[in-house]
Amino acid sequence: MVRTARASTATGPTLAVVAREAGVSVPTASKVVNGREDVAPETRRRVSEALDRLGYVRRPRFDPTVRAPRMIDLVVHSPADSGSGAVLHGVEEAAYDAGLEVVVSAGLDRRRGGTVERGGWLDKLRARGSAGVLFDLAELTGTQYAWLERHRVPFVLIDPVAEPPSGVVSVGAANWQGGVTATEHLLGLGHERIAVIAGERGTAASGTRVAGYRSALAAAGVRHRAEYVRHAGFDRDTARRRMRELLELPVPPTAVFVCSDAMALGVYEALAERGLRVPDDMSVVGFDDLPEARWAAPALTTVRRPLTEMAATALRLLLRMMDGAHPESTRTELSTRLVERSSTAAPGGR
Image (tube, rainbow, N blue to C red; front, side, top):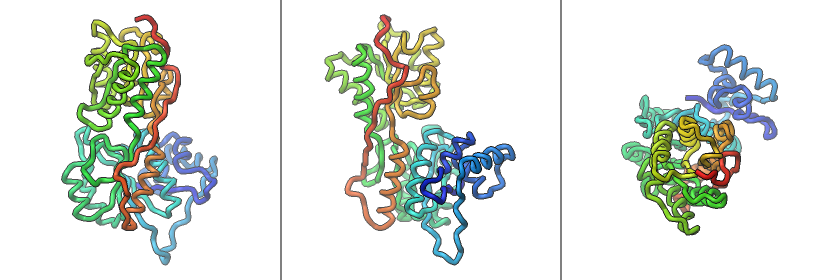
């Protein structure tokens, strides 16, 4: 658990920029800024050099005679995850503008078999006196929702995978439109045998993206093939297996829309195992636009999920709730857009 820090001038580099320059996570850079001891000497040196090189101005310590700023918690499934980095950046910017202190905690994502309550986290939240919470997790348990309600802790979910209970405020991406956009791009290149590898069956985000895919096919008059719809767990290994299954079909697809960039990398691996090339033998479109999409070879065409903007929007909603107001709508969606790179092309004749 760390406190985030921010440059004290509006024009200076953010802590996220410093972390990227030093090749570390934002929480690690924050530990160096705040003088924490639990940082390796080599890491501390790299961060310190980046701070000096970029001209990062450390915020002065608060005068104990001055009223302390309000504190909120941000719970992410993994601070080292690149998606969490984008969320941290958005929260950092908005929190600084609002004069808030942010405590970042690592929770366990339920998709990976854990819960957010690792180490009695919810009790620690109450002991800290946090004014509100932002959750960047796949979903919360019924017990956790009940705890937050019982203790009257305002909270907002950032792009939950599952549909939250009625009345819970969340900010997410326009998943249906993203599915439409990805599929329309492939249709526009001349593909008709288009598969989709979605996340877990029954989850809201995955189902909505697949619905967009089906809608785009129907609008183009292209027959939907049930065998072309596969479900993974939003993880790389399962997506690799699902791509292998698609390649074994009597009539395999020529293109695939993959509902996360992480899964798209698994698709790349399955294709490489068969000696197939992207995009010559198979066009691939991802979803998220994480840094991994740019690093892939070839660079991945993907639908951008505006994580930084969603996080900033979620914090602004949380501020209103902390002041006693409640948003008119419990669901806020931000637009997605296609980022074209090198992983798609016209069908290669397979």
